Length: 399
Image (cartoon, rainbow, N blue to C red; front, top):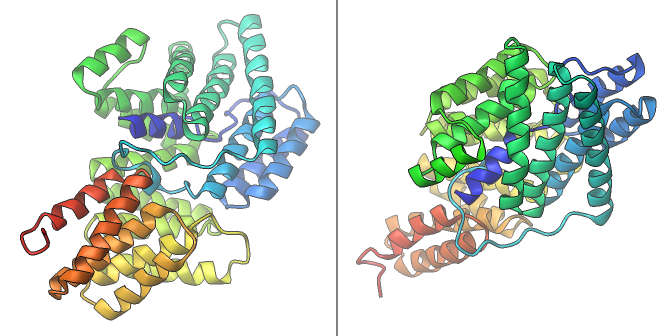
């Protein structure tokens, strides 16, 4: 469940500044532009624009919150953790620690989120029955929880912080039930709690969280339909929830909307290809991945760390499923050679090992599957490592 806590703490917060933030027109315009830049993968430019928004109105909590969220997105780009794959499955017993964030970004994040939280607390103290004041505070505290969990790796500390975010947005809904945008945080945490074991669920209840799997999903869906500033965040959160639930068509519908709204975000094509593979639609996945790779080839902007390896692994696995062994092997070997995350190389080795096993090349199969185990275990992909172990236990491969 350790990875699942990280997932919820990240997807429940996202980058949204809030629907009714009290800012001047200059800050409003800058926030809208910066938000679009984040979703379009212009992460470095987004940081510039968010900083301009905080200068335009230093009392605008949404601007400080947006800057903090954009910093998390920038760190995710540098680490290669911007895809759903990074948050599915279970964590290996020996997590490989991700590299610490750049010191300047960490310092700027802490300053921005401290400012956002302070402004939120001031407004709640001044207007205790104002739903927007509670929304601003809950969103700021939630982003702090997201950073602690996904960047610092302090899941227990993030859990404590997340309780306040959950409570503040529950308060929003009690004061103004029409504020469906508050359902993003509340709904995601409810979904999370419902998936815990009964003892852990009771711990969460005692800590102040509510549960309800279906209710949680409906609340996030409500936020996605609401039209607030966190609408796209809610759609991205639904990608994870729908993939976990096996609701692949629903996930693909959200991705179609996101690709239409943000056509410069090539990772939405990658996510679509990945979702199609989980749905068992290899031919459709290859077509989507080919389209996305063509878009990527024309895109001169900086890549997410390990992005090339991920594209090649995904297309290689699609081609392997289609029985096009030579093309699949070429993609998978290129994925391994590319600079990327170890779990991606591990999955590519798994595909190569499975193909070698079908061809009765037992030596090659054993080598690839052994590497798949070690790479998966070393980079938070225990589920894929276990699949490789299962193949290695077959009588033909066991020593």
